[in-house]
Length: 184
Image (cartoon, rainbow, N blue to C red; front, side):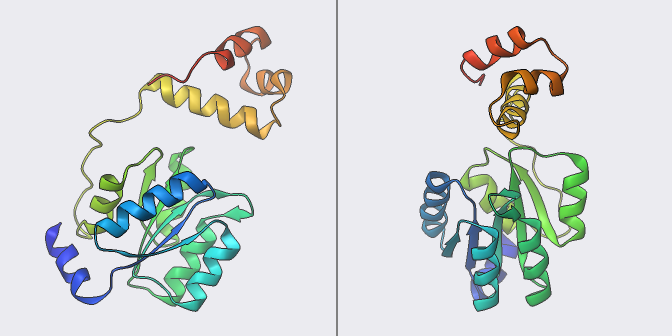
C-alpha cells in the first residue's frame, strides 16, 4: 500500500472530491489535505465534469447520486482524460450492479457511506492488484435497512403511504420506524 502511495507522492497528489453533502465534503477535504493531497471540491456532476476538463486529477472520490445526475459520468470522463487516475465511488445506497458498473467505467474502488478519511486514503493508496481490507466498523444490518428505508422515503417525496406501498410494509409499521433514531 505504501509503495503505491510513495509512487503517487513523487508524481501527483491532486484529488477531486465530488459530493452534494456540503458538511461531509468540507470535512473530507480538510482530512485529505492533512494527508498530503491537493484537494479541489465540486458539489454536482456539472462542477465535477468542469473540474476534470480544467485539470484531470490523479485521484477522485465521487458520490454516486448527486442532485444533477450520476457520479459515474464524472468517473467515465476522468478515465477518458486521464487513464491512470484512481477514482473511488462513494454511495449510501450501494448494490452489486452499481458497483460493477462503476468498476467497468473505470472506478478503482466502491465504498459505502459513511466512509471515513482513513478508509478513503487506504483505498486510494492500495496497490492495483491487492484486495481491499475489510472495514473495521461496518454498518450493522439494522443500519443498512434503516438507510434503505430513508432513501426510498426521500425518493417518494417523504410520502409515508407511497413509501410503505413500495417497500411492501404496513404504513403504521413504517411510521414507527421513521419516528425512531437511526441504529448504529
